[in-house]
Image 1 (cartoon, rainbow, N blue to C red):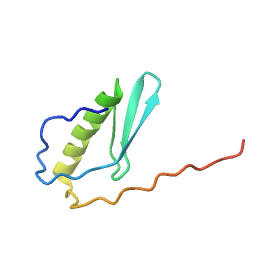
Image 2 (tube, one colour):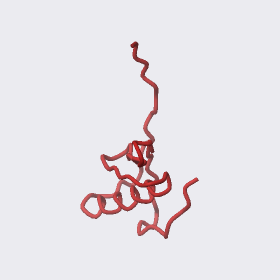
Image 3 (cartoon, rainbow, N blue to C red):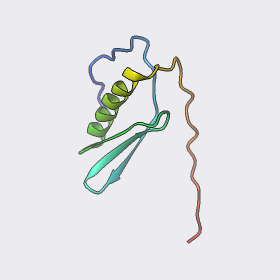
Length: 79
């Protein structure tokens, strides 16, 4: 799993949902709640880089007081 990093500067904290996928030799981490993404050489690295990217994003945007979890579903397509 992803190890917790240093304490967040957001005292109350907000949990965001992210999807991590493998793309060639890297892992891509995409936040599903706001349009922020990052990458890394491992799942943990991609998640840590996404956390940093989110912190930078919220330096210029208001941090929400709560985030509604996205609904994740599968969309089948015929070949």
